[in-house]
Length: 159
Ligand SMILES: [Zn+2]
Image (tube, rainbow, N blue to C red; front, top):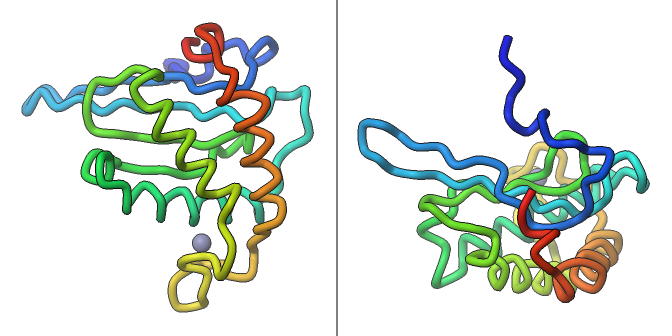
């Protein structure tokens, strides 16, 4: 079987950043979908992010994106990577990392500063509604902003 594209990236040297991992085109409509890897930790060199805080980041991030005036209609998906080094952001359209940087910064500021009850964290709305950690979501969002997003350069925007 062919190796999928994301497995061909050398994870030994990969650093946190905002990277385009795929652009897929539907040949019937010509519509393009861009997938971004929002890498929050250095793979295999930093501790894994726990499921609960990633779950909270997913709930808050998705809520933010679905309510963003500029981007809501272009967002296809947001959610955690299986390896728990970050999240995927999938949007309709042909974009590069600079195009979504402001959106990603505003999303993680929303997560860093969020107080109150987590949207969708109720038994009728979520499959494991108690598996949440808002304090760690705050901490991880602040860390991604301070150590990566606010000081990002080209080497952390392109694979
Ligand atoms: Zn949930």
